[in-house]
Length: 322
Image (cartoon, rainbow, N blue to C red; front, side):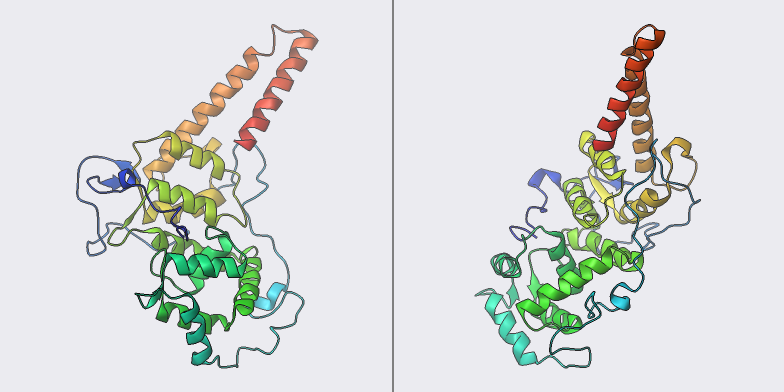
């Protein structure tokens, strides 16, 4: 969030003004889509209807899935992992508006009735986090913040009431609990994922700038990073003709990383065209890597075969770490 997530703010040349982004690709000059305009085919569905596939990039999927921890938090973010509860607090306790108002006043801006960049930085420092830490994104989500670098008074007070937190220590403990819950609860993560798109939008826009989308994808997948994510982000960074990410592309990416096998990808199915471009790019990259491995293996014989095998192994390691 600026200096409180301002590191996610788009540079002046990375906005979607004067371009029309369809599935993230620029097709020609057009005025940026605003919140007052109808979005064609836009959906809030995170798991859009598509055939189920097993995720694969030539290696077994090892991350990006939710670990199952029976009974963790018992589905209650106010419960501690050991089965206890926040000292002196429970869900039935009504937090004093006076306490929350005092906490708000500690961080509010001198001119505006809101907590702005400087106040958010101080709040992050008191919580023990950097402004661009995953936990601060989670805090913004639980406060239902409407935009970056700002917590309005109503967002701050009502959000903390919902979190059952009235002090810095309370907030720290709640955030730790929620982050742990997000590691195992796919439905909660989907809500955070959907929020993250809206949170990153510039006021009046319906499309995330590419730089913002890349930063937010890195951030939101902190607790369980899909294997395919580094390759996806590398692809986006290599293609400067991509000017923005619309909501459908953002939402369907979560389904894509959970279900798609690029070795059996069918570009006639209902994926955004940007995914088609990515799969084509990745398949070509893997093909070239394989050819390079073969050329480095020698002309034959036992020694040549062993060198070839070693070369492919190194390439696979490089690919997995890319």
